[in-house]
Image (cartoon, rainbow, N blue to C red):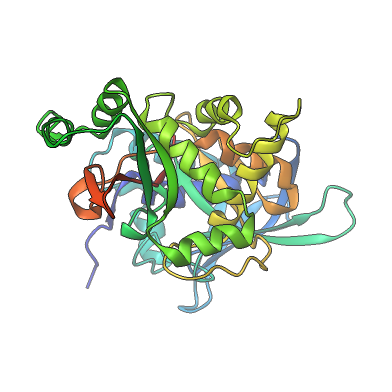
Length: 357
């Protein structure tokens, strides 16, 4: 019995596109290097280029003992046509031109991981041409909606003490009632708080395990993150690149040197590296693991670039320019309202990071 055509969204189809395109081109590039690929594994499928004059690519599903042989020009044409179909699609959709490939190799979904985390592995020679490397990558697509890089929860709430002018009950209510498009307007509330003569000072994170994890990575990170979040809600920017300028201006760590940009960039890189390695807000993070995989980006023109921990500077620069702060669902995470705490006034803001492509 023939299976129905597989349906997937743009991000999921981009994973198959990446596999076919790299297999066809036999190479992938980073910002500073290019690599000739050898064996490629995606999902349950292994792709190898033969050494015959025909230059065949052999795709095998070793679990199911099935295979497909394709000529390079045929594969290049298929990957180009697949990308055009991905651009046209909306929601979950099927793409007939790749259904034979999918069904012959018995692919039941496009998101199966090869090591619990990575989408694809590539084997190639290192930059010196001496040693063969096998590296793992996650695949991210600019064709889909922006995903989260670090998820919000109540544990990522940051508690700030309100200082300056004493606010009466009516002023507190008027600030807490500020909405925009029938949703809580947290930026509007912070703006009104400052216009009313108040200001806020970092106290602590609501999630103690998360705060302790940050301190283990770098003792300055709780204060730095609280300053970034304040800058975001004050309207000083959304991206980390924009908010780095606010951080340098505020200088919460009182660095007092001419190398503030380098100082705060290094601190942010530490944070992003640990989040990328898997740090969560729910448990104490042991910062003793190396980066095990990299990122492959499918851009809106169909180009593919890779970033990996063994090219650390490329990866750090990419993460810093590709992440933004976002406002999560307010009611779910219980933040954004002025409240009384031990006869003092406080407010909670939330920390969430999202991909900016």
